[in-house]
Length: 222
Length: 265
Image (tube, rainbow over all chains, first blue to last red; front, top):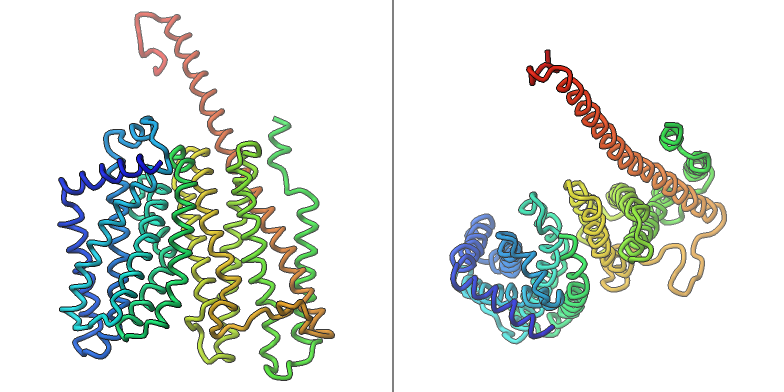
């Protein structure tokens, strides 16, 4: 399974390295969300500083939807999904591989956004380990839930409109816990932030396990 | 044809009885809740809304959630796979969505005078609202035209994922301890906190909404089953029509071989 996961992740990342869709579309989109939300809140620094964690995670969440759409779209053309299904690769491995590829892209994206909130909103992360751990855990959860729901909506003609409706409410706990953990990291309150990691850990574990188990039946249904 | 007309007949007797019992129980709950029970010591008349809000929430969360989860699991399990479970789970989610919306509405009406706000970002309110949105997503997924087997499997998996939210709603009052109070009737030690006529009205409210849930579930299931039947029947009818057209055309073709489109004239 793990070998299969590495193969699938490698394939997805190689496609991304050649097509550069995430780099030229998803990352600029995330930065755009950052800028637009900052416009909406206004130029005063106090409310902007207060809203910075929320702005960061909203941008990450929207980008997750795009990254997931892209991850599903890779498999939708030229009968690729059937090819993957017939190749004898373990379905759990496919899930883990696709999730790992999305997670890696999201991590890079968060680095860019981190720089964005630092320069555009003028906030500084005081507890760096907390922000890093929160981002890492949240990314695992986002990627797993995203890929799982992506598989659920794969092969449907209305995928583009249906996926956000299905996946965004599911990702809401990550938005909440991620924002709170980041807020604590910005304020230098490590203890309060660590509490919110207790939501991110089960979320990531549950969707990792559920996704690995359910991807097989879902692939048959696609 | 006789079997068809039987299948398409009126709903079964027991379902009608359950529905009527539910309506009667609801009537009694309203009568007891509004006229017979005394006003609450702390909340006054506001407490009367609590004869319906917790029962509705119970139906939305546990009854509908439980039936949807059980139906989906039984559909996914190869040995028990049948469209019965698929339809049952789908009906439970749809009725559950209605009750989830009613939970938010009744809670909101109570919250305005009690908490001073129609809505607050409390843990239980937020997780309940999420449950409603997740159920709407499920219904949207189900409406996408697809092969019945594929649709059933997708829906079952989506329902399993929704079920992950149910324990969150249940434990939200203990985990986060925001504005919404914890267990109302029974505390974690199962001690009764409501007494006298108020307790009986409360209990009757639970019975009334549970009966109404069973009734609505049954009615919704029948609609789903009838829709499937109608689809099958339409397919049969159009198939036999095409057959007849084909044989008629073949007959006409044999009678007048010089005119290929003689059938149209």
